[in-house]
Structure formats: C-alpha cells, structure tokens
Length: 250
Image (cartoon, rainbow, N blue to C red):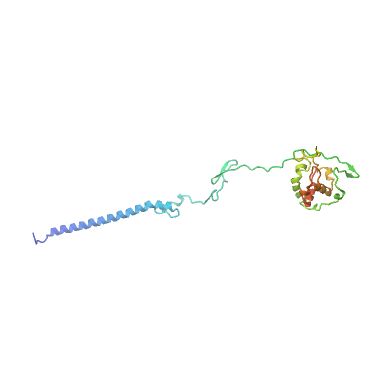
C-alpha cells in the first residue's frame, strides 16, 4: 500500500541479503588474489632452470639450494692433456700398452739399453817387422831430422789425450780404426799407385817408436793415401792427437 512502512520481517530479509552479498564479494576477491599468487609462483619455477642454465655462476634457488653438496662432484680445472694434477702415469700403466694423456693416446715402451759402439769391421792389421839399425828402429816413413826434436807443448795437459781422441774419431778412425789398429771401415779401399795399401797399425811398436815431433810432422804433412791434416786441424789440435796416439796399445 502506498505510504505503508516496511515491516520488521522485510528489514531482516534485506539485512541478510546485504550481508550475503558482502560475503560473496569478499570471497570472490580473495579467490582472485590466490589465483594471481599461484600463477606468479608457477611462472617463477618454470623460469628458474632456464636462468640457471644460462648463468652457470648464479646460485641455485628453491629446492636446488637444499641439495646435498656431496651429491655432485667438485669442479676440477682441466688442461688440453686432462685434469690438472693428473697424468697418464699411475696405477694400471703397463709397458707396451696404450695409455691416455688427456684425450691423446700414448704408447709406453720399455726402456732400451744404450747402444754399444760398433766394432771395427776388420781384424787388427799385422804389425810391421821391426828392423834395428844403430840402436834405433828403422822407419818405413822417415820424418826429417829437425822434426824429431819437437816436443809436445800440451803433453802434460790433463785433458789433451781426451781432446785428441775426439778429433781422431772425426777424421782418422775411418781408416786407422777406433783403436788405431789399421782396421777402420775404409781400410779395405786405401791404395797407393793403384795398389792396395792398408793403413798403419798405430798401436804397433814401429809406429810408437816415432818421437812426438815425428808423429806431429807426419800428421801435418801426410803421405798418400793419408791426407795432410794441416788443412783440417790447427797446430794445437794436431798435438792433442799425438797425445791420444800415445795411449794406444797393441
């Protein structure tokens, strides 16, 4: 009816409706807020692995931060030949077996003994027959009288014979042999006037009967088929060779 005031029951129903509407509104707002937070959390978890892979140096987040450090091996610096501090040697290495040095295969072979010097190819040459005259050995190749009185200025030098041996092995051993016995590898080809002439056995009594000066003169001037060594060695070197010749034994 117009102008009629609402009853108490109507007021109660209106209050209940307003309260219900307010409660529904509050519930709707709370639900939207929860959905927004959940979506943001899911997006963060999906992006975490990608960020970790793109930046290896960044610290892990979320569940990864709770992982046991012992579960993953510590990073070890490496070189082109493998990890630092590790080589192909160690347990399990066997001689003659392929080993690994980093990514490079290496074969370990047994050590070989040092090579022994090869012997001269021929037996020692016969020593010349010694002929005496007036208490002296007659030389088949006689040096001038003035050469006989020359003295070796390096005779008392401690390493003179050693230095002389090195020089002798360079130019003399091929014919006279490593021990001076006239049996070097070229001794079968030495000739004079088209006839075979083996080198002198320098350890023989006849060769050693020469004075130091006579040996020096013969080394200096030579006689076919032996060349003149004055063009190969200086005076000091030739005296060193003389010192070495004095160490030869038959």
